[in-house]
Image 1 (cartoon, rainbow, N blue to C red):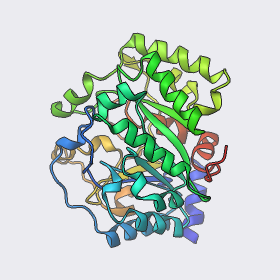
Image 2: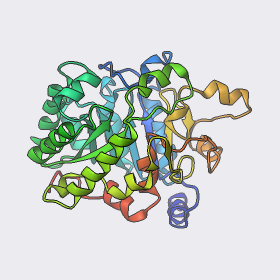
Image 3: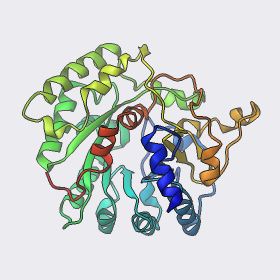
Length: 338
């Protein structure tokens, strides 16, 4: 109890505390998405169920309030329901990021998740081009399965990766129309080449939107946010304005990695962010060491000098840097109500 009080005070004062942990349970996935580089990483021995639960307890007593699961595709783990139930029993809010295709066969997951993020990248044309033929219909079926659940059910947000195809106006309008039809919201993340391993760079560089496309998207989201469909857009245009001249010279958003958030890889190693999955060896060679559990978090540098401006977690950094946005995103009603 004393540790929780101390951690809450530290968070209020802006000091270092692991407010949010995202555990990438596995690098395995049932899809073969064109923009994903995790499939190029070598196989890794994943934590057992008991080890995952011990990890949750370790972070919880030191103040973690939000526990997320991602991958790869976390639903390929058969123990995901048990792990989510454990996080809930420990008093943490739960977040699940999934491609959605396996949700119809795992309906009980919905009762254990507070915030469910389903990846649907634009309309069917752009989504299937990125994630594989038929994956759009499967993801929508997963979304609909979660919407049919009785309370308690999760707050659902479609997470659309903006590639140079899905950012096209017709695809933006299609995914927003889907969100309105389903009574959920949609948020957007920009596809950006940011990994240092050239094998992984190649898988994202060709999908990054151009500066002209980004400018058109910013004008689109500002119009929609001021219009009748605004409640179906989860994002504040202020985040995209804060990026500046994307993609040539995006502005740096204050990084919360290693300060208020961290990630855990499938083997249990604690890292500042997921961008380190593919370059741990280089950092070890330069004298950087990573550890496990809360002790591993304590050893992370407060401002990790990665040298990057924009990254895939830039929006999380933006949200965690503004307490009211954090409350809205992670602590709003989780029963699926409008």
